[in-house]
Amino acid sequence: QVQLVESGGGLVQAGGSLRLSCAASGGIFSNYYMGWFRQAPGKEREFVAAISWSGANQYYADSVKGRFTVSRDNAENTAYLQMNGLKPEDTAVYYCTVDTAGLTTVRAGRSDYWGKGTLVTVSS
Figure 1 (cartoon, rainbow, N blue to C red):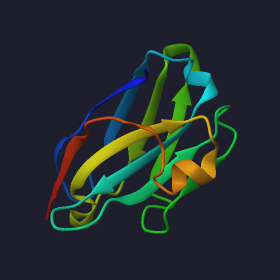
Figure 2 (figure 1 turned 120 degrees about the vertical axis):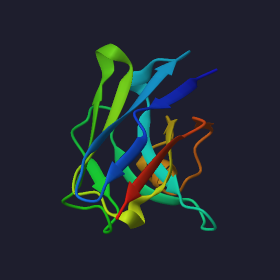
Figure 3 (figure 1 turned 180 degrees about the vertical axis):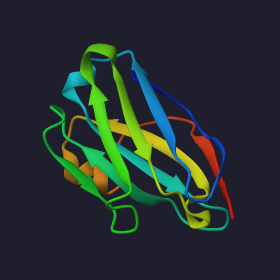
């Protein structure tokens, strides 16, 4: 059973940066495609970014493209989301997710494994 733990959230002013981490255990991390989602208060969960098992391919929501960067370190069983140029509308709980089924499954939010999330609050 794969377990995911997010960290790195917090309060930041608009224009600032944060780096989220997603630590995985209980599986072979390099086998998994990985994604980041977020859910703002009163809104549905939405896709943010995804990365292939090797790290060679990344995908981003239009709303974060050019500001966020997803990466992974398979040796450390950890994935990252570097968030720059944060805006108040980026305020949300951020979740990581993994699946072996492929990026389509991950990007659609249909993965089997999810973390419990980390809260990011961006003040104006």
